[in-house]
Every structure is written in structure tokens, then in C-alpha cells.
Length: 174
Length: 430
Image 1 (cartoon, rainbow over the protein chains, first blue to last red):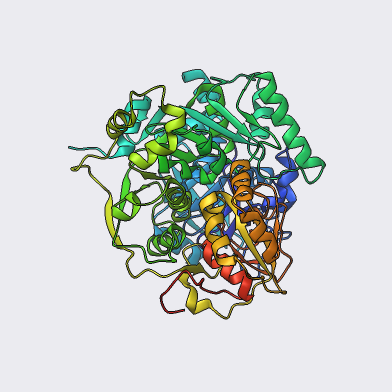
Image 2 (image 1 turned 120 degrees about the horizontal axis):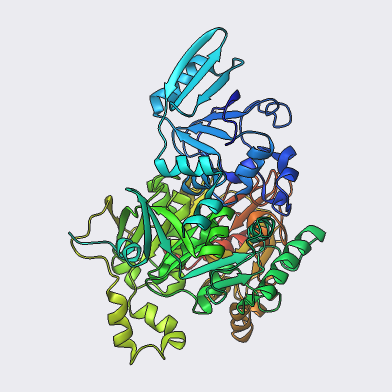
């Protein structure tokens, strides 16, 4: 199973699409690792520097409809190449969410008040998130302040995370 | 309790129900192109699972960057070509016979009412126009589709969009779907199906229905879908005539998939188009839409007519009607890419290509290229394009470029004027 803990990258915007996560001109790459330098290169977000701000971050927390647009799985792969295996948002575009779990990664939805609370309390601070997968909990820490938030994912998604993705699951079962 | 068309298709294809809201369904067709498939192929090879579930149900095209523009895109084509050959996939469309996937595959009769279809491409929802369940997926879902012929989806909860009234002259299905996306918002239909019904849809050609369904994903929808009718039967007749005694009996068979009158919908939206105007997007999201007349002073550098949204023969005819006898502005680069060889040939035979060329347009071969900023019409920083495509995302047609989505009529009128403009086909306020 992949690692779902680490320092948090806050993306305070809704409707971040997969063209912003990985522009189409890089879709000619045929290895996942080659996508690493280009993650979030075209994001429209005030003050964001894709070269500097992604470094050392392993969890993304964002707002509404993350990953909309193109079906390109290059978006989750660009995250994976940067060791980001967990995105937390109010909700996700369908294909992006499925792609994450299909790759054994997690796209976890939390209620809008919870997301809002996290942004108010932690955004702008050096923040660490620890995932307790067994107990469905995130432990978020910054400046000595700690908050525990419970989450839920379906049994099917949990099985995908545990088996490492949809290919092995489906080939065994169908 | 009655069922929707999508629910009936799921019922007819379900192979597993691993939990309440998850349905694993059997696939009637898996479509592949050279951007998302080669990585799936390489992954299958590296897993020692280089197999296909049914070579007759896999349809393959090289369309996104065609001809190849560099060594990397050439390699993507090569991987796909060799894979198709290795697995004896007969329906493989290489350059000379290739076209934009969501325009080409319907033309070949590969989508039928009641079918289930996936492709590693978000605009796969286009094929719902035929009364099929067709959805875009990522590469891993595609990989499993290729290997096992199955895919997992959530329950097909449906929003019914009842389109009523009479479409004014000069207003097209593109204008209608832009307005519907504006109403729903870019995630207003996430995890839902958009079922398009009503007299306006009934009167639409298959091409217009494909334009409607094509952009369902821009509201977040899993798929768009239309109930099959005689228009569907007529379009498909050359491919299905051996399976049915006559057109009426084909229609009777397809009607078994129709949504029941007491089907349960998540939401029903009635949309009267009688006063609808030509629409255009502003900003970087496809739900940012306003009437063309409100954007009328916006200067453009390029006009692009093509894509899986609006590159079909009907679209080319409308644009040519606007361009006939006119020259495009000196300050505009006009590019038209007929979406398939058949549309290209028809346009040639009908004199449409000549009209485009006489007006100053460049006619390119069928390819997706410019729509996603990969080739054949990429924008420079600061440039503006009026485009018949489907996404106005930041950087979509080239970094720092701005895209305004319009119908083919508006695109042609804009090319002539040099700024965003209503066509003379629209008789409302200019």
C-alpha cells in the first residue's frame, strides 16, 4: 500500500482541471516519471510557483470539483511521480477520482465546512497530515496545534487501495 | 417503478455488484487512441498480461496528433500500430483513413442503441447520442476494458433535460448545450447522466445530438444520452439492415431501451429554446457563457472549426453558408479541420472546401491537434481564438492563449469580422 502521509500543499481554488494539473503537451511522454517536473505547471492560482511550491509536499488539500476536464490519467501519474498519493477535496470530477483509486491512490471527499475549517486553521502554515488508514482518520498538525478528522471511503475503493489498483483486482475477479 | 434508458442498459450488462452503488458492466466496445492507450499497452506488457478480451470489440484510431509532429508522437503511433497488428485488431484507422475518434466511430456504425462503450477520452460521452451508455475513463479503466471487457461505474442516476420550444434560425445545438452547461455549472452533473429529450432533440440530426452529448462532460456528467428513434435507425441503417426485417422493426427493438414514463430522475429540467441566442464562452470554464452580442467587440487572432464537437459535415455546411462569397479578416488565421475523411470528401464534393479556401481558410486533415494545443493551430501567449471545440481551459490551445467556444456559424462570422460576431443566419438582435 502507498504512503498517504506528509506535508500538505493547499490549493485554494475550485474546478482545477487536468489541463492545469498536467498540460496536454506533455501527454506525449510514455513514462510516468517523465511527468514529474510539470505538475501543476498551468494552474491559474495567484502567487503559486509550480517549481517551488510542490517540493516536499505529499498531500493536496483543495476545494470543489478537483480534476475536472480531460480523462488523462497523466494527472494522477504526475502526482504519483511527485510522491503525492492523497488528494482531499469537497468533491472530485468522476474520472479523476476513479483514476486515483484505480492506481491505488486516494481521492477523499470531506464536507464543505470541514474543508473550510481546515483552510482557516492551517492554510499558509507548514502543515503535516498523518493518515490512519485502519481507523479512517487524518491527523493534521501545524504550529503545535493538532486536529483529528475522520473520513470514509467505500469498501470497493478500500479494496483497490489495498490491492494496489484495479488491474490486479479485475484480472483476478472477472 | 419504471427505469431510465441508462438503468436498462446497466441491467442488461451487469456482471457484478461489489457494493450497493458500484456496478461492474460488460462492454460492447472499447475505443482506443494514441494518447491514452500506449501507456496501457506498455503496462499490460510489463505485467505479463498482453492480451485483449475480444479483438473485434476493440476499435483503434490514431487521431490526436496526426501526422505525427515529432519523435515522441511518432512512437505513440508506433506502439499502437504494433499492438493492433499483434492482436489482429481489424478496425484500426491509421493516417489516410483516420479521423477524430468521436466523429469517425459513429460513421463506421460502431455504436448502437443499448451498447456500452468506454474510451480513454473524456468526450466518449458523445456516443450517447445513439442511445448507448458511453463514458470516458482513465488509462487503468481502459487497460481493464482491453483485458477483461468490463468496467465499474456508480449507479446511473439521471438528470433529464427536456428541450422544448422551437430553435430560432441561426441558433444551433452548440448554443443550446453551452447554455445548459451554464445553467448546471461545471460540476452540476458530476456522477450523473444527462438524458436529452423533448421535441427539439427529436427534430435534431444525429450530428446535432452528438454535439449535445459531446459536451455533457463539461457539466461533469458521466455521459449524455438520447432515446433512439427513426433518425437513429436511418443513420445506422447501412450497418444494421441485415439484423432487422425493416426500419420499423429495428426501431421497435431499440425502443425497448427507452426510458419508461414513470422512470425516476434525480432532477428534471425543462429548457425552452424559443428565445435562445447564439452563445459564447468567456473566462476559463465552459459554464462561463453569455450571448454573442455581449462579447461582440472581442478581437480574435485565430478561428478554428473542427473537433469532436463541431467538425462534422453539418457543421462544415453551416460555416460555408456563412463564408460563401466573403473573405475572412486580414488579421485572422482561419483553420478548418473536417473531423473525418468522409466529412472531408463530402465537403470537397459539395464545394465546401473551395468556399473555405476562397474565403482565406487553411484546410487541414482530420485531427484533434489544435483543440488541446498539441498541433495544427497552437496559440501563442496572449492570442485569442474563437473555436468550435469544447474546452476554454487556461492554456488549453496553447500556454497563455484565450479560447472562446462558439458554434460553427458564429466561428465563420467571427472570422469574417475579425471580432466575435453573430452570423447573418441569426435574425434576432445582432
